[in-house]
Structures are given as C-alpha cells and as structure tokens.
Amino acid sequence: MTHNPITKLFNIQYPIIQGGMIWNSGWRLASAVSNAGGLGIIGSGSMYPEVLREHIQKCKQATYKPFAVNVPMLYPDLEKIMEIIVEEGVSIVFTSAGNPKTYTSFLKEKGITVVHVVSSVKFALKAQEAGVDAVVAEGFEAGGHNGREETTTLTLIPMVKEQLQIPLIAAGGIATGRAMLAAMVLGADGVQVGSRFAASEESSAHSAFKEAVVQAKEGDTILTLKELAPVRLIKNKFYEDIQALYAQKASVDQLRDLLGRARAKKGMFEGDLEEGELEIGQISGLIHDIKPAAQIVREMVAEFEAAKNEVYKL
Image (cartoon, rainbow, N blue to C red; front, side, top):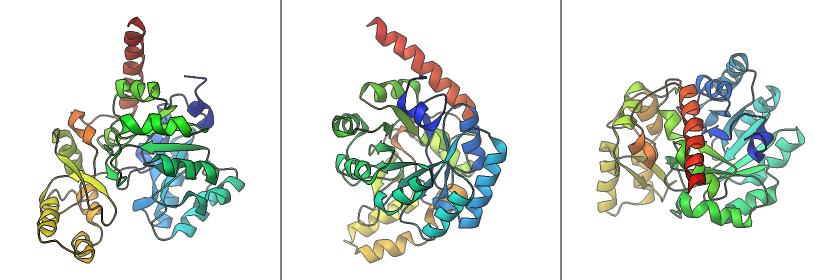
C-alpha cells in the first residue's frame, strides 16, 4: 500500500481513516488509530472550542503520527475552532455538512491538507472545485448525518470516481478488510470507517451505547428526520416518538421541538438508550464485539490481504 494516493497524502501506513464521529471520536481513539498505522480523527462536532484544544494537545502527546480534526460546518463557533486548529498545528482537516468553499482556501494557505465529506457526485465535484485535496464519498448505509439522496456506497463510489480527478475515500458500510477491498475495486483509494470504531475500547461513547451497537441486527437502523438533517440511528423509543409525529403529519417545527438539544449526547455519551439519538450505520449488524482500535486496524489489513489473494486466484 506504499504507493497508494491516500497513504502518500496523509503520510500513513494504511489507507484506513477513522471517522470523526461526535461523542465517539476523542483523542484516545484518534491517537490509537494513528499509532496503529491508520489516520485517527478527532470529531470536533461535539466539542466546545477549548475542549477541542485539550483533545488536540492530548492527541499530540499520545502519538507522533499524523492525525486529523473533523469539522462539521453547521456547528457554531466555527471561526474559533478553525483558529485553534491553526494555533495547535493540526496538519489535516476533514470538513463536512456544509460548503467546502467557506474554509478550504483559508486552511490551504496555512499548509493544511483539506478533505471534504460528501454524499453525491454533485457535491464531490463542488468540493474538488473548492480546492480540497481529497473527497470522502459516503453512502447512505453510514451512521449519523447522511445524504438525502439515499445513494448506496456500491453505486456512489464508481459514479464519483468516474468524474473526480483527486483521491477518493469511500465511507458507509465499511467495517472489514473485505469491504475495504471491495471499495477499492470500485475505485476508492482508501476507506473511512465509523461504526466499527464507535464500538472500540477507545471510543469515548458510553458503554451502554457500544453494547447497543453490538446487539443491533439487520434492519435495526433507519434514516430519518430528512426535513431537518437526515440521520441514521437505531430504532428506539425516541425513534418511535418521531414516527408518532409523522403519523400526525407534524410540522418541521414540531419535529425540531421533539429533537430538542443534546439528543445525540444523551444517547451516545450518556447512554440513555430510550430517549437518546443512537447514531450508527447499517454495518452494526456485522459488529459483534468491542475491541481495541489497533486490533480493528490489524484485522482489517489482514483480511484485506487475504481477500485480495482469494480474488487473485479467481
């Protein structure tokens, strides 16, 4: 994998990127993945600016290898977050949920590598036009905030690859070495893995949420709340409450009132499995245990190599 465009771009050993998930991706997870040869990402979406600074500083102490910060563009304090990223010398930033033009040139001028997360060909091309160094194309199997188009990873990756000139990272439904190989056969240069790392020992999520991920079966997650910001979550009481509102033909304001504030924190960080928003991908049906992040990386790489040899024999 030494000649891979993604390993070269980030100066990492394996083209495995850990998703910057809110309430899951703190410095412990990011440093563990980076130390294992992938690219760890701190998810700033659930952090106040000074909390983010603390996580960056602790990550720098825990690894000498590259790591990144994910910045969802729809969050407040964006200017302050970008200032901290520059002040702390972060070398790679993943932006998502917003217009890549807003900060790409600002970050590039500071010598920072910029990657933008998209869910369609249209937005992949807009990100390329904005000057990003790579794109993450995320299929609708993915957990958390997602595309309205419901384009699957299997179809999205080759459609983006057909038109993109810069490196492409596949995301959505990838938790194994076999899936990694499949994504790369479809045209991806690397993969971003979220749900599998959410159920790792170093994930900052509540143990009850991790256990819910392990227990999840096929069909236990769903994409909903498209009127606000589409999100894939585990079906629970909160989801049933959403369904009840839909049945009453609720307005967007009523849906927003039900969602309220800190619903994701309640579910993933505080472990309220009834009232919380439990964001996870469809691939949770294939996640059966909680293990160290380094082991996840090792197993993915070993399975990737084994699967590659199997395909070669075909």
